[in-house]
Length: 256
Image (cartoon, rainbow, N blue to C red):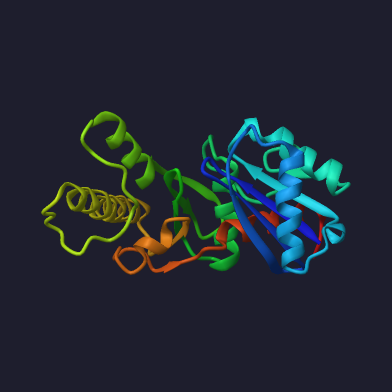
């Protein structure tokens, strides 16, 4: 079986894959200080709780945007799983897509591959709700065309809390009313509906500039919070990044 690791700035997502099926999936807060031993104790216990024997994992692939965490993730695989992991971006990894421009991180490459699998021959915008909110544009040939990056909702909340002495930390949720009558209610409105407007505005402009009909999908930890409230998003695709990561492993290993 395959261990697919998606390391982002906020969370590390671990998935165990049997063929094309994800049989176990867990997430852990990202910390560059966490050792390979700590990863192993945490992950293997969760695997056993799901009835998965860690010894059945024979391969691993890692997509990471946190270089400081890479050493211990690699060590987890080499020491405890007896396999050398593939890393997105290394020369021996074949993602099989064209990248128009520069600066595409592992997460955006995986989103592009996942989008081309889920929506073949269809232009797609992937809105990825993470630490940053990424907009990944994929053309009908499955090429990465670029996109946009905005601060994520939680990052905006942290900026408000740090810069404004009287503003409390809140969680992202849909407010009952647009016009808030308390400080907290006003913050909920500003963050939630502010991001609805931001996403609708950017996607509308991407579509206009691209000039062709496009499918718009959302993914990432906060995607379910906004589901049904952003008019330009057609569907939530929670596994699109993982699907891309798995497909890149298959292409690199030449697995049908």
